[in-house]
Image (tube, rainbow, N blue to C red; front, side):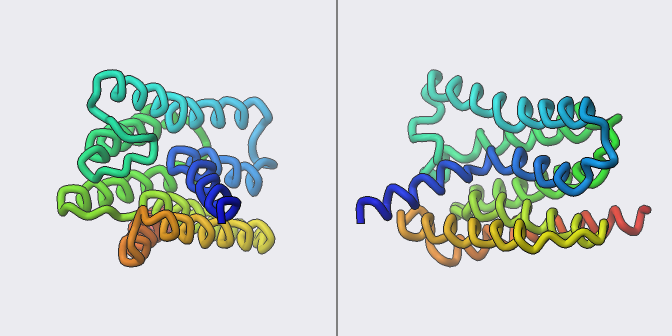
Length: 208
């Protein structure tokens, strides 16, 4: 049982929401690498890494030093989620509208666009005194993005997709096993991750 618990806890940390954009950009270049130079890939990956991982980690420890956040990086308390989510939304907006504005990563910009609204929904859930699963929302958004991207480029990668679905299932199970969420919060997190990606992909498709 201890081994199982350690495995499930490791999934919660390894697939923490702030890591998912890095996974998404990696999957993006997995399918589109032939359209970009190596330098473009390195620069874009570095920009995403800084804006969605390094800066949030730095700001988290700053908030802890100011005692605005007291729990671990999992942020178990709904109230403590409020400020980090607002900051993360701001960082995603900066990433989309300024950092990646002149990049050719059009489809990834759509993913970031959808992610912004996923976190807005999660923010509203905090105001409603709910605790939707951010882990499941982030992973679902990434999987939805990868699926739509695969369809667009006619490059179905069932192996990667099956692995992602398995990771989502284990991560969701870990959140339930650790009693971090109820099943309803897992389902609502899933919807918060999937629906914005579908909507904004559809909007972008009609724009094209």
